[in-house]
Image 1: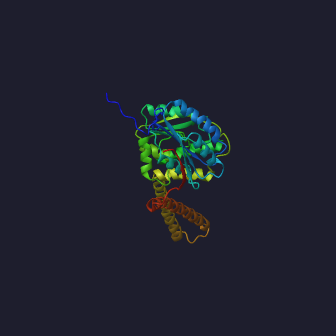
Image 2: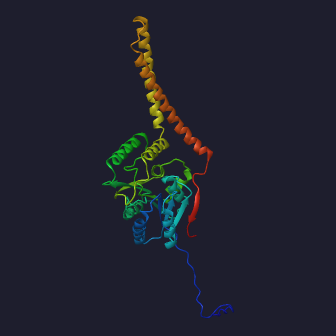
Image 3: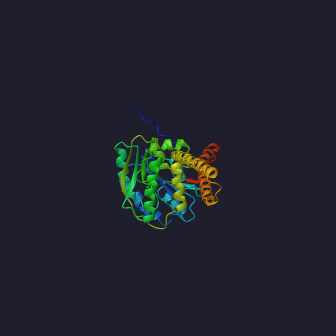
Length: 332
């Protein structure tokens, strides 16, 4: 055995430290954040405790969606405290929850990706339920809320929208408003490759999934603050869902327009008959005006629907940057 000569630059008593790279994360948790400064501290305490207990490498990716409060400072502090497992994407302005998730999807490293809201209405303690379904062979697992803690209007409006979606698309989800969901890496990569501008990520995932599943999850009252979704934004979101995954609105409108055209033709024939055989009448003028205004409103709705689809096409073909990242905090 030939001894290896010591380098003259090596200290006999020195210890050589080999820096082993941290293992690649198996799990990525994606959380969009918008004005959630009051909710972040309890979220940190509960979420990291759950993930540490899993005993597998993980990462948490927060997307600060242009928050106007102290949210980004708290995220910076969390990254400084746990840089090995915490990554932060900072948008220059507010682009919306789903674009915040899409930005994180484009950067995830895990083989399983879980999305979670920052308001603690979906408890982090429910994450293992979704992971168990992924381990059972499902490639996409959606949560549906039991014993919802929302207002009567919000709960029943959600049920109505779910019903409309089921009638107009082939997307089958018990609870489309629940953000606690798990995806396998191939499904997330398919979502990213789609390049969708206005999209509803859970529905997009369903269309790319080959073996989806659902699991009941708890629902808690919002820890602090109020929902960042206004009534208009909720309507806009669900309109995006229906028009983004189906041509049914245009088809329904076309059938309705054909029915109106048939009724109008019949009315014209009746009026022509009465004018020829009964004589000139004035009593039906206001009825004609009512019918005219109704048909004009139908035409305006049709123009709006067509404009929506044309606008979507325009957004895709112009290929404008969907969001701008101001800062990215992560450990290489």
